[in-house]
Image 1: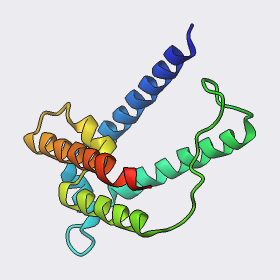
Image 2 (image 1 turned 120 degrees about the vertical axis):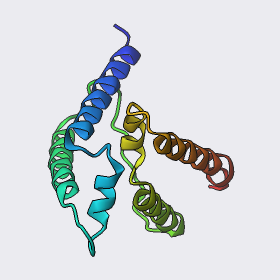
Image 3 (image 1 turned 90 degrees about the vertical axis):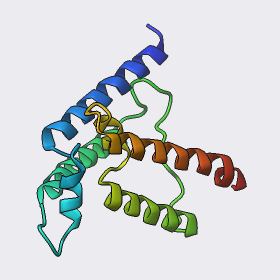
Length: 143
């Protein structure tokens, strides 16, 4: 089979497992995420356990990756090389955090939550896509 088909199937399978995990852990509910961020009120620690599990999975994946010569369905690994902390990184991180705190979603769970059909989820995803397009059209061309 064509390598592109393998890449597509691997990405699709990963996305399905990721979405199922988000659903199973309750992270498709923005109230749970906002409850985790509400450290001075009714704090919900469940997201901490999800994040802890994600760290274990990511750490294991990186350890496996460092022992491999190349990925299964590509010629090389595509890892970031820039390690600088600059203004665009800080501003982008702040915008991400604000969106996460206000909306209760980050991009992956927002897309997965579209399946629930809540109007605020559609509004969040539209705003996210507009922001991504704006960045792509305006700021990414400056670098």
